[in-house]
Image (cartoon, chains in turn cyan, red):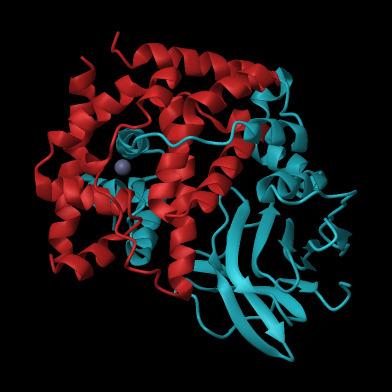
Length: 239
Length: 192
Ligand SMILES: [Zn+2]
């Protein structure tokens, strides 16, 4: 049975503001699927997204480093030209995943502190690459499609993860990142890809971790893994 | 034509040029929106360096795939700020899954903000947008405005708001809907 548009509107209002709880999200997703290409739903959603997006302009702008734009341009592959305008989105995603090296360049700019040398990250091979003398970038391998890489400085707190072309976890699930040492797993947090892309900072000390792993888990982000790893990265080979 | 339509036409022109790989168009978008985007991200994640990372990621996404913007679905500025907001809230939620962030950092209320960056704002041509949005927010009943701000600027979910304020969840939901409806029509009215 599907809901009337009042309830859907109520759920979409919260979704646009980023305040929808997980249970309600699953509910809305089901209703959305049931309504299909409903123009009323589409109009409600677009109207609230527009409204929410503009709320951000209520804040007083913050000065920002002007060099950032140059770093992005320098580090990132040029966008598609006009001929790509009609390209279906899934084909664009496929093309992105065929040139995963671009994500290493993304890492270089996003971390701002990293100066990456030649980096090649492919879905099925691990290559550890020198960043600066102290920073490291490592690629995950495994059964999942797409690419995932992690950048960190040994001995310092914090790691940055980038992924692209990653499939959505099952409905109601998230990806959970694990730091494994001597077989014991500590959660590094949970994440859901947006359009197949993951970009996150984990405030954890990789320290003596020997393996990083990614599993699909329930949205409550359990404290111990309940599923087999989809992606793994071996840190023991890092000098 | 509403007052906000002209900048939107300019933005759409920038996006069209960006699809051709025009670096100047990208710089144009960056200078127009990066300061507002940083303010939004910082308000949510409360740390300047994380806010800058979020802004950078969002602009990278635009630069790499400008075709992701669908002109049928809304304005460039809302689309872009939506991306920034989504990333910032996502980051906050992930941290919450780990450890509840310090309650000590009380975010400043919108009305308490000083306008020290007015010169920056003037340069970017956004004060009109800010005036419009603030005017629409001011028109909301306080209880609706509070729920919208806690959700959008503090990254709280509806159940978290209910828990913190003691307001029944059903009331939080109805205030959200009423506030968003009023905000939507308020923005349209203020622009006329
Ligand atoms: Zn519908």
